[in-house]
Image 1 (cartoon, rainbow, N blue to C red):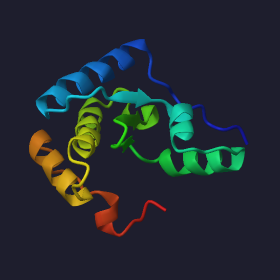
Image 2 (image 1 turned 60 degrees about the vertical axis):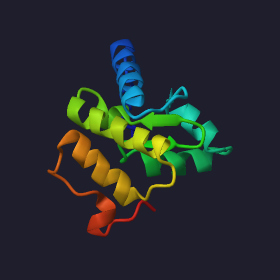
Image 3 (image 1 turned 90 degrees about the horizontal axis):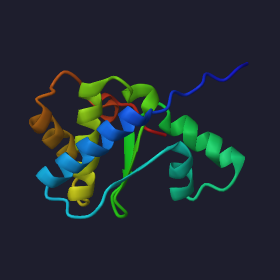
Length: 134
């Protein structure tokens, strides 16, 4: 079976993503630099060392819009789900930046603040519908 190629962000996408992160970081009062990691970099950040661990990680994250390492100010954005999906891209960036700005907040606090900031009330996160990330 041929694995479906994962679309990556092109140069214009990267410029947009970095600009959005810079603007929203400023609005949220984040003073530190926030870095965007790709899949391979995210695996290194998560200290994945074997091919089996990497495959497991990619399987886990490939259906998520994004993740962040709040302690180190690093965000991973899923190009397969976010490329050319601008409203979802903005919502995801805000969500991940809220984790960085407020590392002690619960997922519910982050989610509700994201909703207030974006006006997006048309979905529920999977964990609220009984789905687990594992």
